[in-house]
Length: 224
Image 1 (spheres, one colour):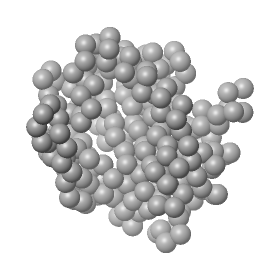
Image 2 (cartoon, rainbow, N blue to C red):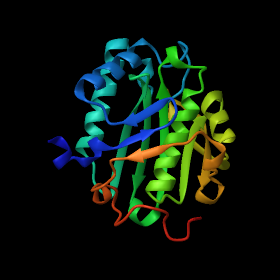
Image 3 (tube, rainbow, N blue to C red):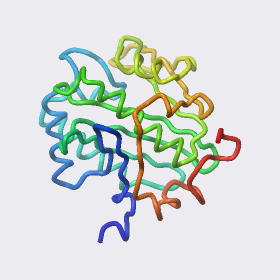
Image 4 (cartoon, rainbow, N blue to C red):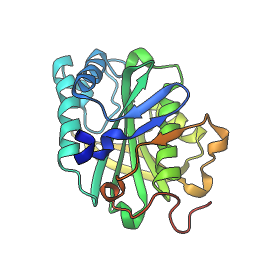
């Protein structure tokens, strides 16, 4: 079985309306189709890597290739977990979690996208809540960071609603000009799971070495 060699395939993070997990090949094709149908309004800039500017077929291919490449180059010192979000059993978007030297730093950066057909239903917030449960309650993360362009109002609003605090800006170049991203950070001490819908995570047994840790649960110095 694939889980004998890649136990992360058994990971399931469940909230009232969503399940986050790694996809099968058929499900990966389906979430790529979601991206091909559109992730945001035409002409908007939402990502530093402008993959949503690609034609639909190339946009879908990017989703597939990025998923494969992140799995293929995974190491305990540098990992990127692309979790597909399923709503009513069908893929609606992707919630990712990335970390460098997680076993020492216990810090993660997250990002996400949601198919345009599924906007306005609170699913983006629920994806983030589910991810935060995984990283804080299960992986022992000390802090979680999110970055968004200032005019990308939806993820900025989600960060603020979930208790993230402003953590400065980053300046990058996009299409030959400087763009600024707002950086937000949520510490374990400021995370309030009791204020959000319940989340559970299963299938983590045996994945500790993949994350560069010895055991699951709160990191040393974290609340609880």
